[in-house]
Amino acid sequence: MPVETVVPGASRTFERLGWSPLLEDPTPHPFLHPGPSRRGRCWGSSMLDIQPLDRSQRGWRFLRPGLDHWLQEQAVQAGVELRKHTRASGPLPSSGQGPVTLSTPDRSSVTVDAKLVIAATGRSSAPPFLPVEIEERLPETIALSTIVEDVTEETDVSIIEAVVQGWIWWLPLGDGRASLALLCDPSEVKALGRAAIWKRAIQSAQGPARNCSTASTRGTPATARLNSISTGLLLAGDAISAIDPLSSQGLEKALVSAEATALAARTVLLGDASAATMGDHRQRWERGLFRIHRQRALDLYRSETRFPEAPFWQARHAVVESKQTEANLPAGLLCPSPQLQRHPRWVAAGDRLVRRDGYRLATSDEESIDHFGSVPTAALIELVGDQLPMSQLHPRASRIAPLIQQSPATLTTILGEMCRLGWLVEKSSTT
Ligand SMILES: Cc1cc2nc3c(=O)[nH]c(=O)nc-3n(C[C@H](O)[C@H](O)[C@H](O)COP(=O)(O)OP(=O)(O)OC[C@H]3O[C@@H](n4cnc5c(N)ncnc54)[C@H](O)[C@@H]3O)c2cc1C
Image (cartoon, rainbow, N blue to C red; front, side):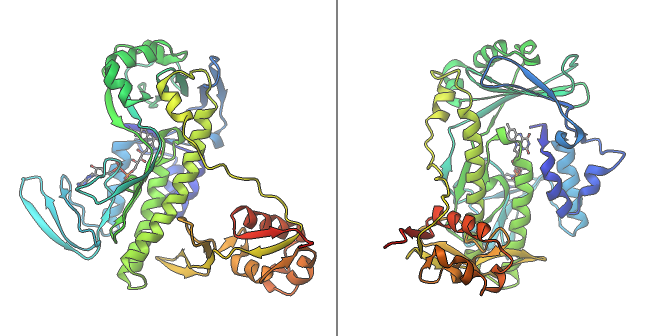
């Protein structure tokens, strides 16, 4: 999209990447505006609710062409050889290394023998260019969007509105224009026609979008999905997992994903791990992140119940999630699951990833866990041993160094979480 929002919490990511000055510069870059001072929602009821935001709640708006240019400059300053207007033609080498053919602006082609390939080719990445399979996805979504010129009302408020056809996103650019998008179902667009679905949606809007019915729009695929790849080819950003635009966190996730992939790539090049191991690690990490965002998006879609007959909403309400069970505080005898296995977790250490002791269930497709809060998993496994009668919790914990500082209440809560994950099985104290 020409303008994209970044939530306030992303400042931590910018700080870690050494880019805080970008956000804090008193003479801001022309591609960067603070987020609007008000936020509006018409969701779950036909009332348009507009709330003021204090500075800490606003986040930022980035004009994408300017941000992308700035990011390219940072890469060049860090020593990257940037080839503009050059495209890789596939299929990319599935082992993650080997020849990659590049088509250059003068229509010639050049082949690079790559030591390691990272595909960061965005949402449309698919075979045969990239040997990925879609592993999970939310219902198909397309964004119809336009830029509204000469905005005179609601110039400093972002608004999301649920309508029968999907949801509308009004986002002033900060320069007298606004971005207006309708996120809707591509099969409805196909059946009714783009102009008709746009007109119907916009006419039903409560906010400033209602004045923009005649605009011509462009369509962008916006389906949230997780790709999987079974080879050593590393993926970053939307090429591996794209989240629902409702979250406004795609940019931050792409930056974090790129950082994680760069560390994985360096670990391979240093010979500390194979490309296949790093590929598996990246996949598990992205899967966990995708599922967190998926659940948040679905919760928000479920909170809108006014349009039960509409295909867009039916499709989203029909997605069944494996319900998270509540963590109960254990009281009886705890035994480790026979499925629990020791498996390292790869964590960032400077410019690479290193192994840390971790555990996961043999059936799990997500990362190992090395800590519960500040408590090392290995110490908790030692605490449980073959089995732990909860009446023995305190005396046993007082003999294990990393647990001495932990209160029995904290340890009980953590053990409850381990039960919820299926790592520990609770038997009644009399058995
Ligand atoms: C409708 C919509 C609204 C959104 N709004 C927001 C928002 O408000 N806030 C937010 O944080 N995120 C938002 N996002 C998400 C955000 O745009 C993406 O998550 C982010 O751009 C992903 O970055 P990326 O680098 O992985 O992919 P992209 O930004 O798509 O970049 C991929 C790049 O790879 C290039 N490429 C592709 N194939 C090749 C090839 N063969 N050879 C060479 N280059 C190639 C493409 O040209 C492109 O430049 C939105 C997404 C959508 C669809």
